[in-house]
Amino acid sequence: MKRGKQGRVAFCPTRKPLRVLLAACLWLTAFSAAAHEFVFKDMYGQEQRLSNYRGKWVLVNFWATWCPPCLEEIPDLISLHNAHKDTDLVVIGIALDYSSSKGVMEFAEQHAISYPIVLGTHKMAAQVGEVDALPTTYLFDPTGKQVGHQEGAITRDNVEEYIHKK
Image 1 (tube, rainbow, N blue to C red):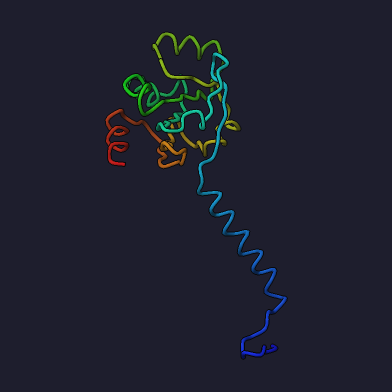
Image 2 (cartoon, one colour):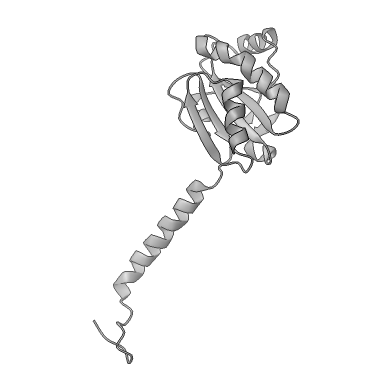
């Protein structure tokens, strides 16, 4: 290695690729920690985009009409959405593993589901995260950052307790 006038080690050209790689890794880490976007069309053709809800908590719930734990949590999700939709939280339901869109629409009407329902696929679900079991719920904070994930049924009380602590 060459030494400069002041006794410092001169710039080594082989370190430049390492610096570029390090910078790229840091950039990717920062980017992955940032909020990510999802875009879905609900049963009525309305676009459900995470960025449209900035300033509110967004709960995304993956479910199916044949799933007993999903059916148990629907009343709590309706209650949660109705209590908070105009202030600080919205619920978006994404139906998976359905046999017909008409069946999901009828189910939503029969159960008076007031939150937006998306007719989803596992490929669409990947915009939000992995769905290995139903129900699966993801929670995004008001900045759009994913802050929670749960497989299994949730309750209104659990969600409200969590958001009020934050």
